Image 1 (tube, rainbow, N blue to C red):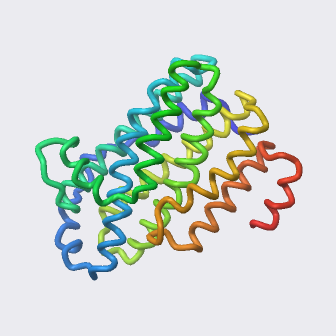
Image 2: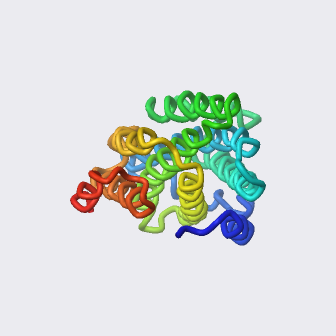
Length: 261
């Protein structure tokens, strides 16, 4: 059985880090010397994260008052603090590495928004916003919000993007950027685990669970070709294994999980 809220709250406190201590300026010269096609792939991925992390930091707010108990609410608050750190890191990436102009995060975000894939904008600016508004209006829809936010956007879309980023940065050319992405990925792992815990507690309708498979498959295309097919395949298999491991898949999907692995 996956751990309860107290475990995740302690984990969040232990893993806390400061995005302003990561000296990204050391990577700027290396960025300029990258082969153009590689720099373009990284630009698309980083721009997508600049947009995505801003929105997940803001749209998690209604989840806290909708939580069924104070422990769950406290973990949502801790996660929101994580997301603000992620947004701060990627705003610094926008300014220092992508060269986004402007005196504030909002103006820099407008610059990188034009570089991000359109499906990423649709997922994080529209679908996530709609889900968060639905939770704010009706707390009983928290399960729908968690399924989209934690299991699809974090567990599939951002996981795939993080793995693509880390693969691009594997040679150590941009070590401080890689370190920052590794810290974000570490946070996201417990966020997804907490999302699974919430789903078990909230007991969503079978239709909601079944839709997670379909949504996961479609969401993996959001990054386009900058996320290789092998990474998409592995992330989808992991998504299915998570749902199966915690009994969140319909019975007839367990066979498909084995094939996916």
